[in-house]
Structures are given as C-alpha cells and as structure tokens.
Length: 439
Image (tube, rainbow, N blue to C red; front, side, top):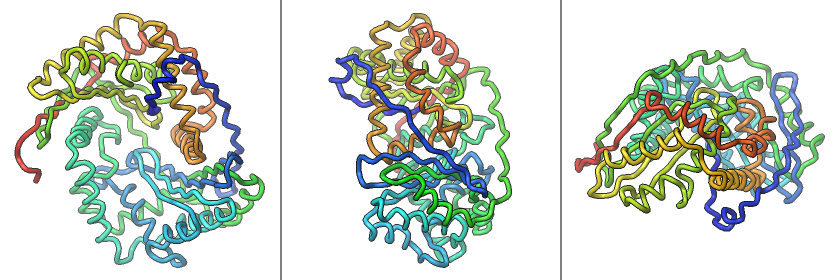
C-alpha cells in the first residue's frame, strides 16, 4: 500500500518506533444499507465528513472509460434545490472547504467544517446522492473541462503518459488497465444516457458509506445522518466485477516515444493487495530500495554511478484487485536506459538472493511507522485512512497494519522479493524522448 515516507532524518537516526493508538471507530448501518463510521476526535472544533461510493474506474466497461471521474465532475452541477456550482459556494460561505476525487476503486466527496456547521454538508450530500441534475446545459462544456484535464495531467506529462501505457500492458484483463480519467476517445463519446445510467446504478445508500471524524457527539451526528440519508431508498445491488487477471508468464516490454527532457526506465511487477500478509514485507522492500537518499537505488544509481537523476519505488496494496510493485529511474543525460536497467536488475537480484541487514530493516520499519502515524495528524487524514481500508477490505484492518509491519523479518523480505520481483512477472517500459512537438 502507498504509505508516504517522510524524509525526517532525525527520525531515521533515532531508530525509535513511534507509538500509535488504535482507531476506535463506531459503526452503524441504516435500514437502507448505508454504513456510517464515526470517530470522535476533540482536539479541535472541526469535523470532516466524507461520502465514499464503492465505484471507480474498475466498474466501467471498454469504450466507456472515464465515466466515474466524469460523474464526479457533474455532481457539482446542482440539484433541484441547489443551483449549479452552488455546493462549493455554500460550503465556503459557511467557513468550510470541500472537494472530491476518483480512483480505480471508489469515488469520494468530502468537506471539513466547524462542528456547528457540519449539518449543512450532511444535507447537501444527502440531496445530491439521489437528486443530482445530470442532463442540463453543463454536460458538453464539462466534457471539454475533463478532456483538458487529461491533456494537462497525462498527455503533457511524459512520466504519467508512460505509466498509463505500462498499466495497459501489465494488466491484460483486469480493469486497472484503463486510466481513471479515461481514454480521450472514450471521454469524447460519453453520452448523457451513459452518465445517468451510471449514476442510477452505483449512487445508492447501499453502495456507499460515510466516514465522519472530528469534534462531535456520535449520537447527535448519527441522528442527523439518519434524518437526511435515512429517507433515501435502497437501490438495486450494482453488478460486481468478476474479472481475474491471469498469471503473467514471461516478461513484457514497451517503448514509448514522446517529447521529453530525459529518458525514464520503469519496471512493474505483479503483486498482491492488502489482503495478503506479504504486503507488509513489500511495503518495507519499497522503502529499502528507494525511499530517501540512503536507499539502495539512490545510493547506487544517483550517488555512486551518477547514471540516474532520481529513483522511485512504489507499492500500493490498498486496492480491491491485484496490485503492482513498481521501480523507476530518470536517466541522466549522456547515459543510456540500458545501463540504468542493468544497474536496477543487479540491485533487484541482490535483494532476491541475500537477506537485508537488521539495521536496514529496522530503519525501514521506523520510516513506514512514522509516515503512518503522521498521516493521522489531521482529522481529514484519519478519515481518509478509515475510508481507504473500508473501501478495499474493512476498516478494522487499520489496527493490524503497524503490528504487521513490526513482525516482518529479513527472511520475510527475502521471500517476498524472490516471489514477486520475478523477471517473468514484470513489464519493463522505457520513455524515449523525441524532439517533436506534442500533437
């Protein structure tokens, strides 16, 4: 899973584990199937309220990619009671801030406000769960906004564009092969009926859950949630994604030519999600390989050999479907991608054949633990963590995470590296810079 690692060198030097308290979440389920997760935190007079819909790009079909993200945009175009773009204005006028995001697995709407005003957000979210206006004059203009967003975030970003191509090669069946924002031709062809049907299918209380963290009394805020959301009828059970990614049997390669300053070499290895106990070892392995300037890849490729401008490793096990473990490096000018790839291969071969040192492993544990604890610093961060685990598995797994990290041994890391960093299970991609102007 993706746990951001902070570069606090004092923390790294201390080698002292950070203590974290368990999440004491109160859970309730309304008669219409809507789950509510409440965590009181009275350190400040603020409350964050998040509605998580169990739908993302993995629920789309070929030819209709980008629907979940496009619907997220259109949810701000009003209801019969709330005018277009008034949602954000109302939240701001009441002293709050709000936004939304879409991933392969879920779509989330959220606002953080004072405890006195959070009822405003509850009423607005309940209203648009069932009354969103999706057929107004905003449909085509918003489609242009989404297409421009895709140009800026993917097509004008060489590294992001390479990642999109590599995901499409690494996954042959599972929906993670499609980008969340959608392929450009698909976005262009989405219709109002597509959007309305997607909303009708997936936006229902029994396909959503609410996370609330902050300064409130659980009984009072649950009563308000029941008052606003309890009157929404349960929807039909949405279709389940039953696709399974077949085992990869042999390396795949892709070369991607695009206007860019420097080449990039990347390798995507198939890996399990958070449901596997191996996820703890893979989290630590990603830190050992590329988190910070003392990591193995940085030391070898950037500092000693000076063949890479930067290195990254990522493992995000917080997913419903199969995950990936990735390594990448930006190639220095006058150096070749092949030379960088050989250096990465040598380091991968080493972690697959020799156990990591105890001090190196403990340092990685401290980094992961510190990042996990600091991620709970804000009420928004706590709610996000609860929602992520609930969305892909169950929220209770949060409390198993740090204990799971603490018991990982060097033998566990070696076993995980041998099993998952297998050349036959990887996709290698190379970004080859060109001088042509982007089309």
